[in-house]
Length: 274
Image (cartoon, rainbow, N blue to C red; front, side):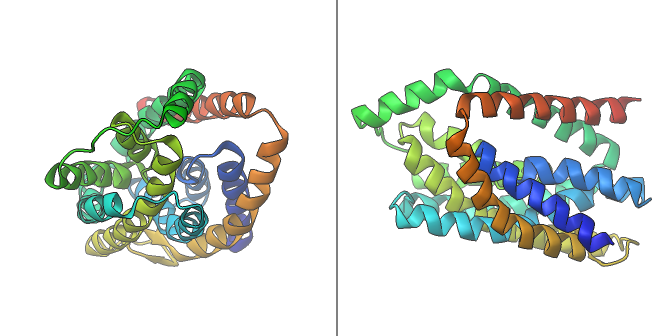
């Protein structure tokens, strides 16, 4: 029965990721939080399990996304090589930091983050126009030095672990800020999701085992059944979501998703505060 629930979550997360063009983590974390709560897991471990499992599932989806973007030549490999070590180290350490934060505070942190993503998506229309203009003009200013990129990767990695995401919400704005065209920023961000997901999942496993989490079918803070069910289904339904996205209005879709994230973000905040 558990596996069926996780297959359904995977189907929803993959479809939403393809439909709205966002990482599945923003869907997976809230859904897992609700399911783990209904399973009567320890309140202190629920949020950590949702974050760790979310990062583990992103390993599979990021490989698929990376291959697709690489075929189109949209991955800036030299930039990836500069960011990757910082992303991996930062995400592993971020898992350790998350392990020291209480489940209650993690709920509040993730709630605020989801509201921020919702705000960004709702007012994304104007930014998209600017990005498209940059693409046409071929704007591509110089990126920071290698040490600065390494440091930026570390910060993005830590944040990704705490929010349970692949880092796209942070990596894309970082690259476009320095004039990287939108397609290459998204493609490079997809590649960056892999070291983030691997290091984050390993970190949540390691630090979770240190805390001796008493939850069945888990390795540290990663739920094995949830990882398998979500990974399998999201791999297929993401493609379906992407097809549907081409039929519907992308602006309307983003605004609908922003409303959904606002509701979920408020749910986390209210549950944490009350």
